[in-house]
Length: 83
Image 1 (cartoon, rainbow, N blue to C red):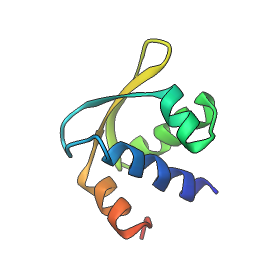
Image 2: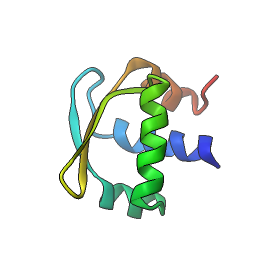
Image 3: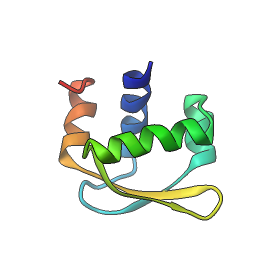
């Protein structure tokens, strides 16, 4: 389930993002879209950041975060896999 969740997060982020440019997102909106809690999302986003699919993942306030979608993340969305 975790790889599917990570791909779903990257897909959601890629809808609004320009690779290499920081964008702001809502934990609430993402959580409702994917049916995941804020803590689960934070865990997946932290993993995606460590694995360099996204960069500059930073929580902002209570409900939002910023992240940069890297080319590696965009490639994972297009291939629908981490291979």
